[in-house]
Length: 85
Length: 402
Image (cartoon, rainbow over all chains, first blue to last red; front, side):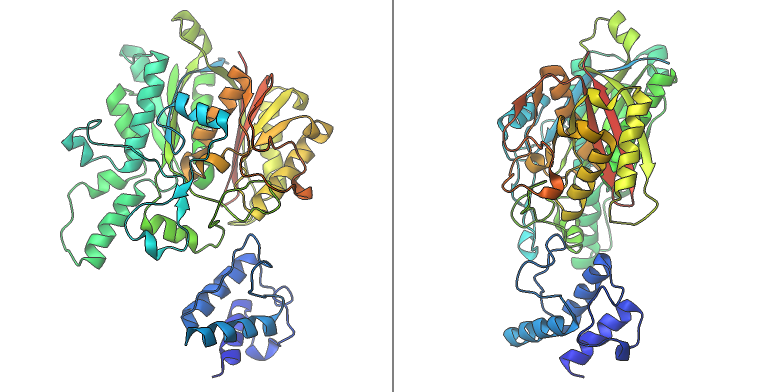
């Protein structure tokens, strides 16, 4: 599975949706993921890829990690995974 | 109904090892938050906190006591001694039989759990010290205070996360006001600043890595603290009759439950608790000069709390002062309301309002007088102390100058 597929699988599970219902343009809000769900998704993604995502729930839009939609999240994770190697 | 007064106060926290030291630090706007120092701290991403420094259990407690006292109990006994010494109250006979101790803590003996899990899981040991259970239990501190001071009446521990101390003190107040107890020892304690304690909080991603800046637009989270605050609540007539020094009067309280979300605060729940405390104390909103805010420095709490204050106080919200002393001592979780009550006592007794330090940028969503960075002299008749816990459990106390 590609990074994109793995991230979508995690987000879909959090949203209680099928992966096919999660598109790159989907926002977390549209998928029904609230702030607690977001923190849980980030934890699941960190565990899946063994990375640390710079995310503070007090300032979700601050920092380099863009969570504006699924595509942005995937791009951010691809970057963190590439930096890890 | 009896009138209830505070005749003794004690504390230990990152600002000081006594009430005078703590109030001096609050007056000077000093910060007790710094680099954490304990085993495995390098494995944490959050490495700051309001840690109690220079506290030596050795010398205060004997060897046998040390094996039974978790750090949260040591803090409690240290604060209780100061409070009861100041009060001058001695518990004998009928007074002892009817007086008790109600304390708050969220985690109890967290470092005892942490040390012993480490021992069996990480070090692979199969034998642990026989006193682990009596050391870590949440009621250990209340029980040791009862034993030390001969308190034989209603005694127990309340655990409502960040509102634990306020719930505890509200219950103690009720007991004295109703006449069920002539005096109660009350307050709370917390000591979660160990690897496991901070690691658990880290996961929630609400902690700041650099500072606690309540109400400031650039705030980025809470910072943990540790310590205890303990008070003697006493029947006013009794305190007068024995010539005790009275610090202030406790005039009311209210508790409410958001019934909404396990972590997100609710404006309505907070507002109902503040309005309820005013109603219970039979005071007009316009009499309130100071509110010690819950003010955690998170995005969610501070704007919700300010909106609730605006709802309850209307136009008077612009004329009262509201500060968060967590900016100085950190968030003591279950012990926080007890240490913060000291700022309310200082406001009504000494006419000095503790500041919100670390305040850098105004936030239009927190547009109240947050007493930025410097303490202020002011005549305050009534002060409120807010605590709004995870789980949506709120408790607010009202104090009056005497």
